[in-house]
Image 1 (cartoon, one colour):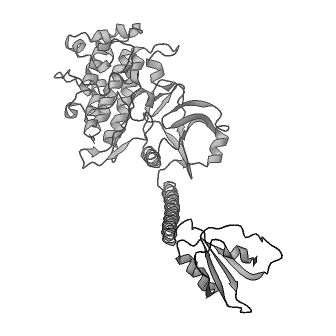
Image 2 (image 1 turned 135 degrees about the horizontal axis):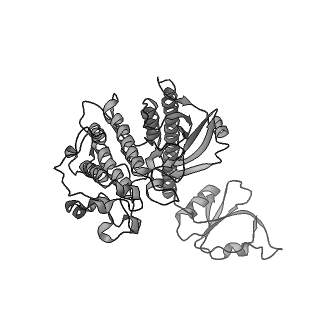
Length: 453
């Protein structure tokens, strides 16, 4: 560029000095008052020249075109956005954060791959175990259910669809990813896949493809027990003989699980929704997703709270569970079958919300008042019904050691032994009375269906 002598003389802080160009720039940087540096070469010298420090930057416009021009350079001092030290710190922080994110993503990817391999190995082993049910592909079950067209019901773990496999009608339970987990799925397959009893729903097969989980059961045409005892539909009221046979079937199924298998099996979710009926109203236990195996040499097992409010035994508060927890739930179900009402009914008066908390009725020998008034046949078998109610109350003892074993329950139902006479009528409700009114949270409820399956 070219600089006029007039421009050079403006706002000079000091007399010009002889510098080389690099020293001129450095001197300006070290001078706080210097805002710009002007350097022009002295005579014909190509390295040295005069250096001027300016306190205010201004336009370098040529004021006079006819004056002597000089070969010169100008440097304006500008402020850095960050000091070198701050920039270095920021670079270190960003580098560290970036490295941590990369490491985290790599770790997550590695864990997911490992989990996927473990699932494949574990699920692959299922098909190799002796006595396991048939393993279906997802495509086979899509064809069997016509792309899951006819839905029979849904619940906490998934939905159930009608299916047809060759000559057999089946119910296909499609498990939600956020519902029954892999452990519960494997527990159900391994538990019911190796046991066979007339009062347990038969597991026809299963499907395990990546994240897809499906269970194939025999089809139960009459659906679940709850739709026949709560009078929610136009179904005819069950007579006493049918109810008594259903109670006996439930007892036999539980007796097999508790006492006749190599390992004791606690179902842990006995309720009307998990008791299915066939064409002849024969009852079968279903939904073993919460089942727990108990070794013969162990008296109890410690497990987290599971099951459905209203059917949970008092010992769940300690998490030390035996198969006697099922016997308590059985007692609740028997009371519901006989009374035709839910164990927790918020439409009832305050003192009658809990079915099993009606101690005064039991103490005053007024059990007849609990019999389902929608069934004339039940009223005609009053004495037999009351005896079964006393059996239910025996099963509802707070102290699990005072409850009968399931084989004893079966014997009582068959009439070979009598009900215990020393029964404590101080029952306890295991679910708050305001649960149904306030929408209080509760442990997940397993499958509940409104139709056959």
